[in-house]
Image (cartoon, helix red, strand yellow):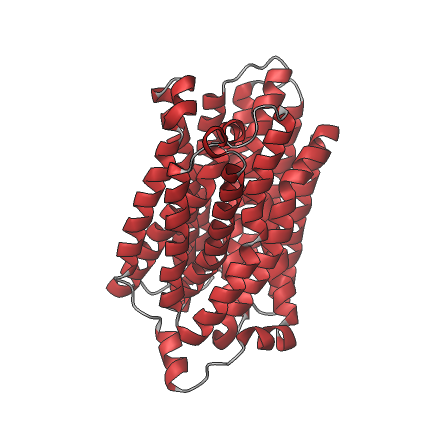
Length: 429
């Protein structure tokens, strides 16, 4: 057991809270698209197009945001390692705010024809660039403002807040469904969450003006330790750190993209096909519960890490994720009641909070002068590959045999369990 950690001082607490709130609002802007995917598929593609291709094009457009992330992440991380963390922190939110607001006023296919899906694609590209720099920048920013003995809790608060952005998107979806008729949603109400996202973004920009540059960057700048091409140093001398970060990010994509973002649509279809009738709104409530347990788990992991260290806690949560993922897909694929399915989904969401170890590992294994570039490059490349391919994976192996998705998630949990032994061999805290 580690000694009792120092408390966060007033400035560190302010940095953590402002960064976390900004992350919540920015991730709301990024994920709100997926909650209204079915509406977007009807409004932004030709009416004569089949439902399959409209849906496919919509999810492909959503996936573009993941595929483009490495470009934004690499460019902004390069500038962040050279010109300061705060500047890139501000830029990422601006690149998210403007496209989100445009989404709320974008004319549909009926008004401007094929320009509608083209502009929609461009919006997702800019959002992908923004999100590519946002989360790596936030993790680095909080890390470099926090005492190492409180790093787990600080990163836990930040990661939990980011999942709060997904929860906020779920709430917006439910509220729109409850207040408006389907015809009203199709006509105009679907725009409201995007317009709210633009307003949230403006609030985030304002909040981030109160942040200060990290003392770590200021010290490197004063001692002239900044590099001209940080990514070159990453590729030459930090290959092992890149691989480790990529594996940890792979785990994160399974927990977030598959289990949290995409799974509810499968739950709705599978339950109704097996005469366990459930509405879209009810599924969204179950999803909100899983997001909530995920956020609580992130906070708990951060708290426990600061006391017991990373290795043992990673082992426990990896094993919990393996068991709960297999159990959830088993009851979903069998004749168990909706209540049992929902219970195991919430439990799997709780153990999916092992995603909090992804930033905890990454901020610690790269030297400070390449931390932003190394973390952002590794994270975004892996997320583009595994996150971008997740919808395709779900649509193929999930249709063939639903349990294969459970086996896939269990395999990711096994990677996390194996990673704990590797970290222990390296005396990782």
